[in-house]
Length: 85
Ligand code: FES
Image 1 (cartoon, rainbow, N blue to C red):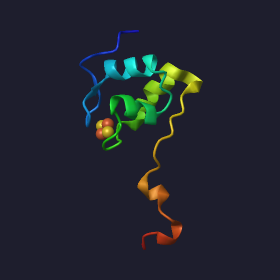
Image 2 (cartoon, rainbow, N blue to C red):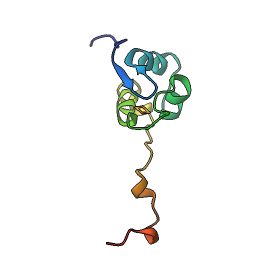
Image 3 (cartoon, rainbow, N blue to C red):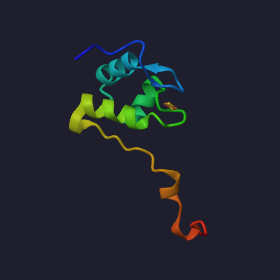
Image 4 (tube, rainbow, N blue to C red):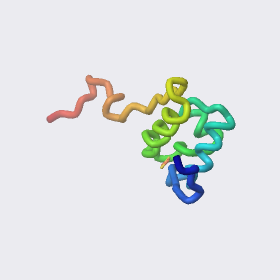
């Protein structure tokens, strides 16, 4: 396994590198996206990196990771507010 990269960006919005993310997950024992955002800011913007951040959490934390991802806006919409076809 190659060492985490200082040049690979894992969160474009906050410009967080793979090395910063991996270090934070390991040294701070992070287990969820809220912890990652609190300690690195990664994932605190558009949220499009959440699946990637979740993959790192699962890879480094295994079963201990709780990678609850935000539900897509469409899934949160009440069915009574369904768009007319
Ligand atoms: S790419 Fe990470 S919050 Fe936008």
